Amino acid sequence: MAATLHDVAKLAGVSIKTVSNVVNAYPHVRPATRERVQAAIDELGYQPNISARSLRSGRSGVIGLVLPELSLSYFAELADAVIAEAEKHGLVVLIEKTGASRDHEIAVLSSPRMRLTDGLIFSPLGMGQEDVAHLAVDYPLVLLGERIFGGPVDHVTMRNVEAARAATESLIAAGRRRIAVIGAHEGEVVGSAALRLAGYEEALAAAGIALDPDLVTFTTLWHRANGAASMRELVQSGTPFDAVFGLNDALALGALRVLQEEGLRVPEDVAVIGFDDIEESAFTVPSLSSIDPGRTQIAAEAVEILVRRIGEGGGRPSEPREVLVDFAVVERESTRGPESRAPRVEGARPGSQDSAATGV
Image (tube, rainbow, N blue to C red; front, side, top):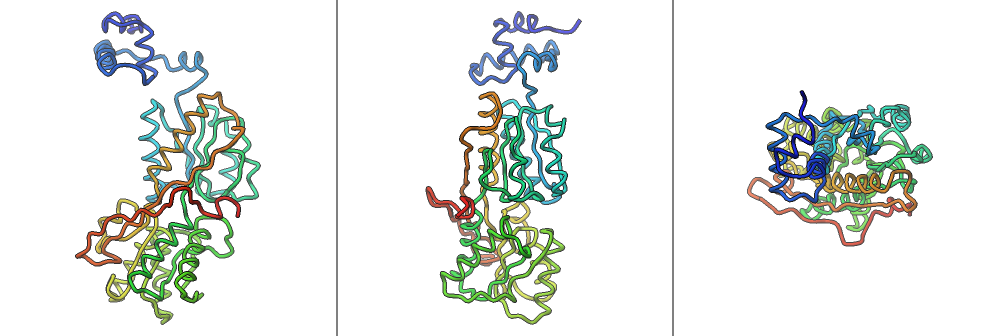
């Protein structure tokens, strides 16, 4: 016969309510009591009846995470951070990949699968500002990314303009004046590429450096192969440059490969900086300078807000929150050389935010 809550409570010497609190991961249980109950659960092989518990509470203990793709390290590491934060709240994460398809992203918002979750963390890449009405759902939803602003839901995002400006300023401070950009998107007005390009242009203008359109390269995707192709095209064009800003780390890593193949020394001939500070960046040769956009903070804020909205009963918030997380410039060998072990340079100013993020 399967063990029951009563059996666990009797063995642990606590009330059934206390066992229930431990099973449901309620925080207000003394560690010693929690350990005693968990030991009893393990000894008896007790398995909670998830279906019955969901019927009683109206909750599944599962949240959804929708991402455009997992092949890019940024999104894989973001997913890992969200899972870690969700576990702190006793939640399981159901991940859906959309392939950056607008149709898929819109469809997932009304998918029956979402009814299996208590709420959703949603990072679109195919949808745009014109799709804001699709966010008016009747369940807790936290929006990530830079494709839609001013929607009817809570929004957690990074300081793209400020961070890109700081990345460019770090190159200028190192004496670089011919700074190439890899990864711009043709005609994009709102989105990561547009915001980061704006930050780059702001830094040049502030330093009195004229913008050279020949130094701005365009790609449709942000993978290593795209970075390599753009870098090779720029080198073969004969356009002089002494620094490269990859709008994400994958692009910058692709550029590093081509620079090495072409016999250009990094950072002596060309300094390189990326954006995202993925784990791999610290282990390349040379190690890649980058922008840490606050990925861990994004995950923590998104999960915390979602849990709060779930606790409030779900539905659209009357006053949606917009959270802009901190960033840091992480300088490594690709901009400062192998002898340098420079500290992180925190970049966010208290109370500051990207103008694009507020619709200005």
